[in-house]
Image 1: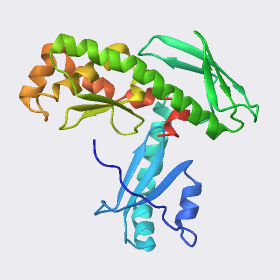
Image 2 (image 1 turned 90 degrees about the vertical axis):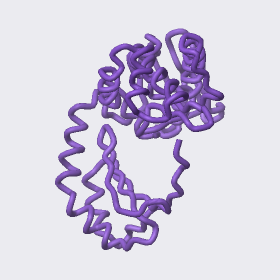
Image 3 (image 1 turned 45 degrees about the horizontal axis):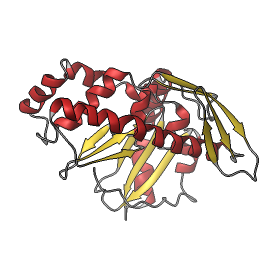
Image 4 (image 1 turned 120 degrees about the vertical axis):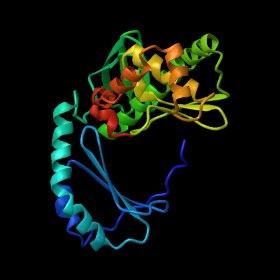
Length: 254
């Protein structure tokens, strides 16, 4: 897992980017000490992130974004059409395909209640959150706990089958990676895997476990993957569309 980039907002108070950003529902610009070049990333369901080297002038960023404006708008429109749930409002239900479980969601905005999520077999109640942002954060924390309770035993079972055992398991909320394996044998798994089909989750876990032996994507690595997950390359391709199954409310929190 790469170290997190230290970021700071770009001052756009006198910038034409303000007008452009008004046309895009989710438009973010961040400075990065590690970035050497300007880059534009478009994440589902249409979140635009412009990564700017620390000392680059605003006018250079304006020119770069304007030169790619049509591509940004077309890409955002295409992602929005493909995404199953582009809305950002807190959900009325949460369906986790990996677990074959679904919960209805209700909200109790009592300001004196501690922010928490109460869970039963088929329902969630969010207490103490009176605004959408707080509700999304509460549900994200619930998902993080759910992902750990589900994926840690799943990794343990696959470790017994494969003989590949990680030193530790981390649960993360990421927009760009389903999982990773570090050189110190720590697996990092994305809680968004909970929204994927069970066979795709199993494949991803095996994929990362195989990196314990092969820290690359060489033919030897894929041979090892196929040993434990036949058809792994096809499953890997199916995961490319996995982001379209992540609800919009969650993507806003990643």
